[in-house]
Length: 140
Image (cartoon, rainbow, N blue to C red; front, side, top):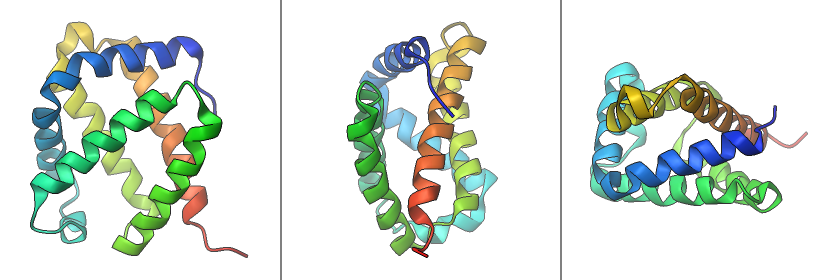
């Protein structure tokens, strides 16, 4: 699974547009996630503000890290190991990705979040998810 330079640029440009409203994005993301996957709610503590800040920091790091995937992979591997400790499972990635796509669409609007931008984000989310899922597997 790969992401093209053009897709990276689209993701980075669209993220820059939502970055000034990152708190709203994070709030919308968690609201959506808990609606579509209520079973994941117990994985998060009561302090969702802190979790929202962590989400934005990680999203920013991942988006910026797309220019250097070799450096991004260890960050994602570490993140995956921490998520295992919290009780995250590989099947959680689909609702998380869907909630992020929907939240980005709501923040950017149909015009800015066109099909090309959406496909770019899907490619990046799949890359991140596959990297993290691989890191979540127990060592053989």
